Image (cartoon, rainbow, N blue to C red):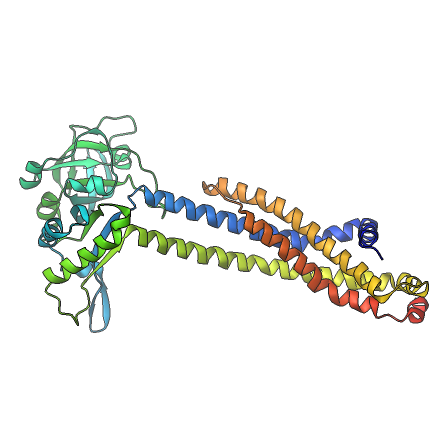
Amino acid sequence: MHLTNLFIVAIRALIRNKLRAILTMLGIIIGIASVIAMLALGEGSKRNMREEMSKMGTNMIMVMPNFQRRAGVSLGASSSNVMKMADVIAIRNEATSVSAVSPEIRANGQVIYGNQNTQTTVYGVSQEYMGIKKLIIESGRSFSEQEVKSMAKVCIIGQTVKENLFGVNADPIGLSLRIKNIPFQVIGLFEDKGESGMGQDQDDLIVAPYTTVQRRLAAIDYINGINASAVSEEKSADAKAEVEEILRRTHKLKDSDENDFRVMSQSELMNTFSSIMDSMTYLLGAIACISLLVGGIGIMNIMFVSVTERTREIGLRMSIGGRSRDILMQFLVESIILSILGGIIGILFGYLLAKGGGSLMSIKSYVQTQSVILAFVVCFAIGVFFGWYPAKKASNLNPIDALRYE
């Protein structure tokens, strides 16, 4: 039988049983829609995260103390006090691939203004920190070198701190707030940055001179970390290697000693998170594929029912000269059409699902061409795989037995 005739016969058979055909396709529709939506939302989340992290500077280098262990038990990075201002000075003086470097000392606590209060993190840093972290001052000013040396009680606040303490429309410049009961004058206000790619509020912070935070708030002689900028994104790997070499020397580590610090570039961090997001997307896609398997089994069941119902028709076709090959192709084409039609509806439904889910999650979803092509290939394969056995069974029927079938 000609291929066109096979399609016509298959379409007519499906139209005769419209409701059954739609219910058969339901598994394929749900499976394909789930896979398309998962891949689109996963890609959207990944791009959104990379975009947000890029705003922090793609050439940023972060240095943190390594996890300390005692009696085989990890005490966490915060327990380590191996990093000093001498490390910052050494990197600033010796690393040729580094353009800016700043210490970072963190102090958490209650911040009070009048009868308002909020919990936030105070970062003790140098003036270079704002450039490294891409923090832009909307109003007011940054602190000066003299204010760093004199441990001046001045600070720059983020938008969230301003709203929590002073109100949305207030001008906080020149006002005083108290951190751990120590008065600080607000000299600057950062531009709104929103949430980071990891959901962290980047406006909930206070920045002050590192000398002030180290001596007046934290009362420590070490620093919690170092932030630096490579001269360019291409030089990030060189800058990271230079920083590591300098710190190993300043920490007097032997060749056999492990680093008591960790150095990570922003691009490495982005690649790590991208890899995690890819894994999550593929895992969710694999779970969604279970629906496709269920849909394929549904097609096989319905094709068996169809073969049983049309046994006499098969016998009649064979008795007037129909070949086994024609019978096999007739049911196989029917199975493939069911699968591909379900796939097309599933792709449209998946597109709408991705857009709707993206709006709810406040991210832009991306339906990729390769995922649509993959969906078509999978649908065709399901049609062939799950339709082959019922079609083969139909083609192997004995014409006389088929005609006698009640």
